[in-house]
Length: 387
Image 1 (cartoon, rainbow, N blue to C red):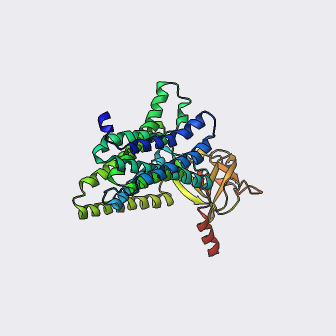
Image 2: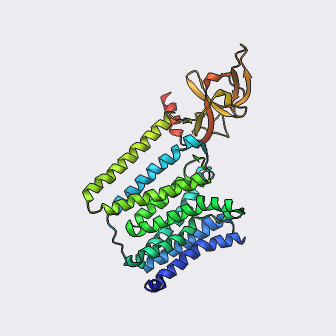
Image 3: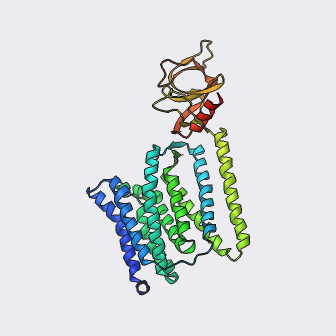
């Protein structure tokens, strides 16, 4: 191996060292208390990785990969990502959903997409340049090294702070280390088989999945690791099949288009089913400011169908009144006067001066579990226009 290492251009090892420094230096400075975590991830690391990418551009000037069918491979990766995301999101119907801690509002989403997106794109440019300079003769063992080194960037070192037992380290390994390594090795594989465009399609797609959805399935550490590792394996299988079928371009182009069509159909069926309330969860647009500041006008809330016996004081519920739906908080629960034992709910908007009329149990649709601000404004405008 050391003999093979000598055949690699020295500049490749310099770029590896620069990339590793750009990844680790901000983490080290944060861990010793010199800079904050936000400065480390949002400022210093993007700057250092971008600088490394600019150096890589100068070093690789005049170099070109010989990858063919780049657009087709990016399309295949997009299709796999789409199918995976639909299955991932729909799995929440079985395990329930939780609020996404990194998507609390649109400002946070934009900042995260910008900072992590810039870092990821620059790092993939460096990875592509290193594999381009390394040559195809050394692609396997060099790819393993690069995949291992670059996986460090996808690992959160703060999770090791409270790890004190074998069980803790096992959880970290399964939920974080294995998916990070699988993803990084896949990206290195894409660098020499599918090109930079495919790398960016996968990497930026994953970042979007992580930072955009306001709610995500409630996975434990094991399911989290399995889900992300399965995505990397699925993309690898799809691209590897593409390489073997490349001798039949017309037939394979039809297969790729078929994959895209299937993915689109699955996405549309899932969205239509979700919007029409076919699952346990359904969206509902907030039409007024009666629940302000919790939910403002134009927000879309996610309502989980619920048994009226499960509703408690303090829950925000959606109920059906004459000709419309209302989303208000339960402030009291009583029983009907006929002795049947049926519950009657007293509700009121947080921004309303008085309670609503009593709500019967059969009027209850469900309990609000999450919200997406502003995206329901088109429905609000259409309703006002129709008046």
